[in-house]
Image 1 (cartoon, rainbow, N blue to C red):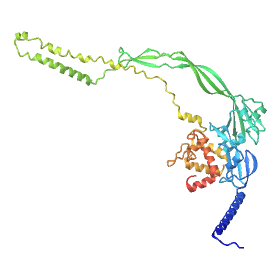
Image 2 (image 1 turned 60 degrees about the horizontal axis):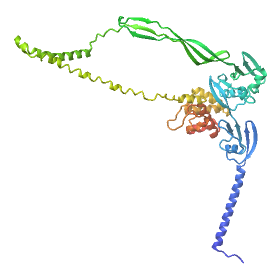
Image 3 (image 1 turned 180 degrees about the vertical axis):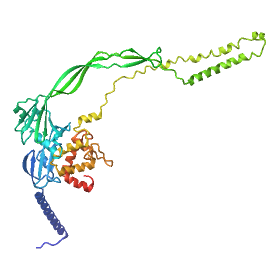
Image 4 (image 1 turned 135 degrees about the vertical axis):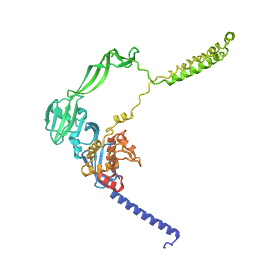
Length: 487
């Protein structure tokens, strides 16, 4: 018997059809996602390459999936920075810190170089003269044994103790080279690598310390005193000055036998200096009238005149008897009247204002020595407030580690030239952007250095990482900058 049509049956059938279509779409989507999301990637970590199949949506998701710990200064590059794609190539290089000298300024430098010669070569690739860059090796036995090699492609010239030797195999750590030549390195000795033309030079500087005492003169001081027995302007040496003497103790640092620096440890005064005393005649009194003295004289005259007037009144009486009979009180009265004047001197109890002498009560606690923020930032920075040229030299080597040389480096130069003129203190007047790369949120640079506002190395390292992550290369960042005036 055929099923009869009903509204309920129609609704059920419609729902079944909708569910079937939805299921088909879901299955198709899953198949499509599985096909497209599945990627085969070449992953190179510190020179070791493996081929990985992954469904990770991004590069850092892949690295997390593969349990690869990427630190702040490590360099991650890819041929598909906009997103992880099939057949992409990802390279991870772990960075370590060494010390370089740029034009004599010591700079801690994070590098991925395999050798000291390669590190110097990074700077050469971007037209920085190799003679301006020196790689310092603070402790060759603790840090370089089995680590960075000196020159992976040839011999090394070794200079130590006034002698020049050659190590034919430079593809080994400094410690191994020294051992092969019988050179012993002291704990304070300095080891550095530099290039001169095509020659890689491994230099040893012997550092010694000594404590010395030196007798130093203490210059006397000169004092002048006024002697009324001398004519105005006349001078006379009352006591000849005699220099004193002190013994100063210094800690002295010698590099290859030559004094480099000294630090004062203590000083002891053996003989105090005797001041020179010079007597000087009093100055001539000024010819200019003293107006104050004239005013005082006028006041005295005004006080005397009223006392003389009563004595003039009796003069019209010519009779001598009348003058005898007159009461003598008129004459003493002027004398008596000034007598009360001593009363104003009564306020001599003015010493009462000196009662507040207990004011020395304030506790003489020494104020804590203020911390100089500039000094603190200087000690905590890798490249403290450099000139634009030194900052550019640093960036040249750091950029070359990303493979950014030639046109890539020129494009990076142009971007930061327009953004900040390579000034570490550049501040955008219309936004919070700050520093050489003009980081819009400056606090983001703190991951590369606590004192990022003064540390050009922190700013540059952040900027290079930003360009690598957002654009993949300075060339692409420059194309974007030209159309938007920012990057």
